Amino acid sequence: MQFDYIIVGGGSAGCVLAARLSEDPTVTVALIEAGGNNDSLLNRVPTGAALQIVRRNKCNWAFSTVAQPGLGGRRGYQPRGRGLGGSSALNAMIYLRGQREDYDGWAAQGASGWGWNDVLPYFIKAERNERGANQFHGDSGPLNVADLRSPHPIAGLFIQAGEQAGLPRNDDFAAETQEGVGWYQVTQKNGERWSAARAYLAPARQRSNLHVATDSLATQILLEGKSAVGIRFDRRGVMHEMRARREVLIAAGALQSPQLLMVSGIGPQAHLGQIGVEPVVDLPVGDNLHDHPDITINRRVANSELLGFSMVGGIKLLRAMARWRRERSGVLTSNFAEAGGFIRTLPHLKRPDVQLHFVIGMVDNHNRTYHWGHGMSCHATVLQPASRGTVRLASNDMHAPPLIDPAFLSDPADMETLVRGFKWVRKIFAQPALHGCQGADRSRELHFAHVDDDDAIRQVIRERADTIYHPVGTCRMGSDHRAVVDTELRVRGVERLRVVDASVMPTLISGNTNAPVIMIAEKAADLIKREAH
Ligand SMILES: Cc1cc2nc3c(=O)[nH]c(=O)nc-3n(C[C@H](O)[C@H](O)[C@H](O)COP(=O)(O)OP(=O)(O)OC[C@H]3O[C@@H](n4cnc5c(N)ncnc54)[C@H](O)[C@@H]3O)c2cc1C
Image (cartoon, rainbow, N blue to C red; front, side, top):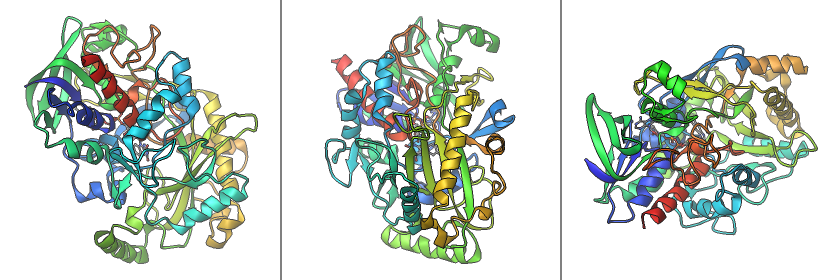
């Protein structure tokens, strides 16, 4: 029970750290993961996540937020991956990086060493893009990035409609410019989901210097004075301790990393006192929570090739299962959000402020409200939200969920951006390319058919908007006195302790967050190795 490095959390970041650090046979590494191995068929079939995302199960923590005034007092839903691969075992597999300006913004805010030119080599190092290598892409990393094997024709029509609405065509959102409409690339290989666990951990798992403990919930960081020396964890009801000779690395995600720090006494002193946790280091852990708010517009389309519920659809699904088993292609390889785009919703903006995800099925309430029939939908997402919330403790016990308050739409600018995004989706849906498939017919819109003016749009946004699953920022990296971790991701004021995951992002990147988290962990592994030598 003594290792050089202990990593808490086997998600996107944790799997990268475990694989990279254990490349050195002279060091020993332990990875502690609360969930299981995530190696069932549902974890491999790309569409399998649809069943897991909707409710709490062994792959999904399925948290709720506290009541959100910006969402009319509703509590938001926060699915989070559990088990090896973490959220990369549950996500929609879209491969994106955000915008150059996001990272240059990090550096300008004090995260020196994390500007675009600093992080690009780590994106490239991580990536194995099936299109091959170029100045933006890698072809020899662990993370397989592929074009969809069986893209749906209606997603192609959406792209055409986007062009008809005046957007440029973009064939690579992860290259020079993000603006435009096009197909998303996905983290898949041979028609299977390519989670961080499959990409990084599986090839490393046989190493004798790597110990992976699943079903193990870290309940406390063990501190001696102000130095991290190990972890206490609960494995199937029995408490254990593990000691770290060099460092403890927290990679439990943007909601649970701050929770673990706080239950261990690292966090806002006044709050810890209220919860009955002895404060050790006073830091603004859990502040700066932000997430991408999102509204989804659904239209019914009588096309049983789209994902949905019908007798014919059921028969087609059985055929699709056989096809996937036989040749790893067909609709089961869909990532749902097959196409999308990035829009500047105001002419003076220098970069896109809204992202679109076009989905080949209706998505109502995170797919938790089912509708008989078939349809399509499009999400509009605020890329650079101004609202900031918190993660706080409900109790000093890690078994209890934290209090999650993304403060959605608390900054009015986010609401206005979402209204403009909503109107852009309508504009694209109205284009001739979608006439033939009923997609342009407003009366087929779920919930919103009679919503027209901006006030009515604001009202439905309050009633229906929620996350697109990218919480970040709760252990903010920086060089100022309010930062939680420094630019080498070391927790300020505590020795031998780092946070390496989505929580260190100073500001949310403009896109989906899996590849950026993997980049963060790739860079962190290099920093840790360099410091050790
Ligand atoms: C439904 C959904 C769809 C998404 N779609 C996309 C997408 O298409 N593209 C994209 O780029 N991004 C997407 N994302 C976001 C992306 O997957 C995440 O940002 C990323 O995986 C976060 O990585 P992480 O390492 O910070 O945390 P996670 O991957 O969530 O890993 C945290 C891990 O820590 C474990 N853990 C937590 N607490 C403890 C503890 N106390 N002890 C031990 N283990 C613990 C958890 O079980 C989990 O395995 C999506 C996310 C979700 C939930």
